[in-house]
Length: 239
Image 1 (tube, rainbow, N blue to C red):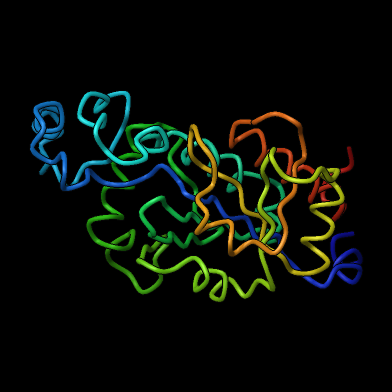
Image 2: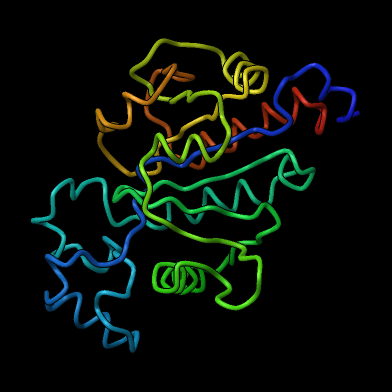
């Protein structure tokens, strides 16, 4: 049934971008903070090699710029579990990218299965930031990371443009947004940060900005609804 529906849509895959993701290693400004050093010793790693986590490094983060948007790797963890385990991804109809708040793009092979255990996920992300790819050996990495501008990331995804979802924008039904993305080969950008708004630098790259609900929703809820809508439109799952 999916093969038939592909003829209706110009794009063969839904492209999903987790934008301004609160996923990063410890910034240099707080690398010597006692809370950071303590957690690094416990992990038997260098402070600069561990992932920033507000539940552990809250006091160290207080003076960081945009602190309210940082240190929440769990948001990315849950969103990736939703996306990469979905029927849409299993059918080969999904591409997922992470673009961090510090301007790093993570490219993910759709066959990747993210660890369900949070601590194992953190270990995987620390390896990724340190070595730039995982697994480190082998010809084809499951994930790799590089510093890149958002406009260049969009070019690499081969998307014709970007739809950003924000409760502050004009309302459109979810199915309307997803159908537009599929028909016009547009990437859908979802914020992967806990508080605040998209940066102006991010918004300027959006061709469209839509709201699917009048209030803020958590990242994984938006991801799950977008995936379900695409699965329905592509007749992967009948709701």
